[in-house]
Length: 152
Image (cartoon, rainbow, N blue to C red; front, top):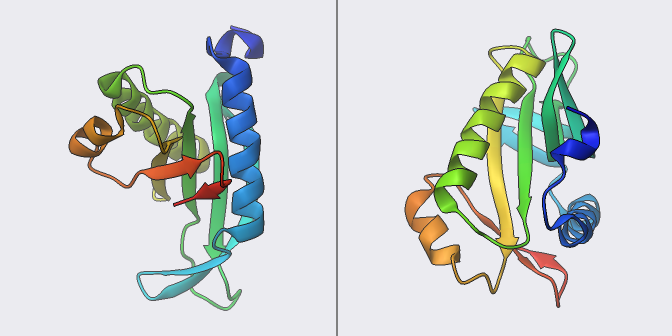
């Protein structure tokens, strides 16, 4: 499979939303947080991160953040990753949930077991299926307001 084979049918709407969300996170998103009483800092963020596992390209992450301990003197703690799964329009909730669970496993394999991985869907504020996603998905959901260019 080539990288272009990974594109979805609504690619340009996805790409625009991905770029807008990435810009917002870079400008307004968290840069530090505490996880289990350890201070972390955002070490990197990027779009379309390839997941190459044992020499095989397994997929891409829409937006991936890498978090590392803020102090170098901190004991060895694993990196944490937050993946943003961009969805301009929800077409299947079950399919999205399966995709995010698979993505979580792939990131763990790519980054090394023991890392903490959180995958968060990002959907449009006016998506009619947003309430159903919130009912079925056990994690957080980020909502993108394209008009106001805000993530909440």
